[in-house]
Length: 492
Image (tube, rainbow, N blue to C red):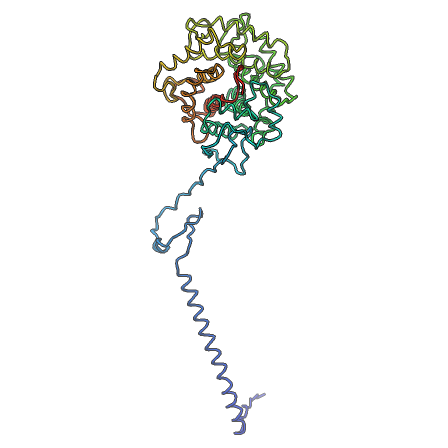
């Protein structure tokens, strides 16, 4: 079938008026269209220029934003082989103690984690170390009130008075704070310190915190102290009171046992933590039963001979037990016998020997300190011994007797000499304080630890964690001497 489409008939002239009307109306459409096209072109131009403009910040390697890049060429002009910028390490956070935190029992709690590699402590140099801090907690007040007189400088108002009386500088206390922070950051997960000889390292580190008045209830270091004590309790109970954590005492084990027993005794005295009572008694009984017939102690507690270096730590542990007020049987008697032993190794010029009468510089401080610790006698041969130590020290270099980096540096001897000088007091302390305080503080690493000294052997010279822990604890204990133990004849 054929299909045809009839074209639509064009209207007659009568319809021409309608067409003209439509054409007239369309001019508004074209005007609107033109305006919209112009607006679109204008907007597109603005966007194009915005895209081509230099950015305010340029992302650099995903590591951060570099501001003020007007002097940088456009990205297309950057050399193709330009190495990405090295990431910038954030500066270590700063511990800020603006007023009297330096003489408070516990360090101010910080809201940040202190960087392991660098600890900087800022404080006003105008801080009056003699002023009693008003920021002491209730725990601090109770703790200070319950301490024996010789330990009263660690807390409460006695702390500030002791620091001022003994002429402790602000920088010295800051060095102690840095050292304690380093110890906190380097404590092992099980509560110990060091890579080896953990009993000794843990005992020395714990003594540092206790010397600063820190216990299990301290705001900043309570957890650190608690972890250490928990390890001592668990491991020591398993070892039946042998705090070297051995089945039997070895040559080094007697050192470790004496040091850790010393720390446990101080901890109990300061905290009255009843969990420690039985273990402390067991540990002290090992020392009492290991004393030789001559009044001294030897390697492995063999009783075959006496050793002043071993004996010094046992005497310090016994003195800590005496201060605990637990009245452990045999403690005072053992200390009396030890004084007889010390007399037997006294040298002709007032010094003390290793296993017989001798004037040995590295051990003479042990003899003088232990004599002062127990009997407090400052006359006669004790005075002679103190004078001999000062003379021998000054003979090395009259202008600068103590030099941390010299071959004569002996941290082990200085640990004892520093305490002996303060306990003796008077001119002896004035002289020694001028020699040692700035030297030890000035040698500290930025991270709070201490580097290997120029002299000495063994752990003191090791670059590993064991050596760093050993010398850091010994230096902290030296710097805490201003308030850690007060002379028995001193009133603060």
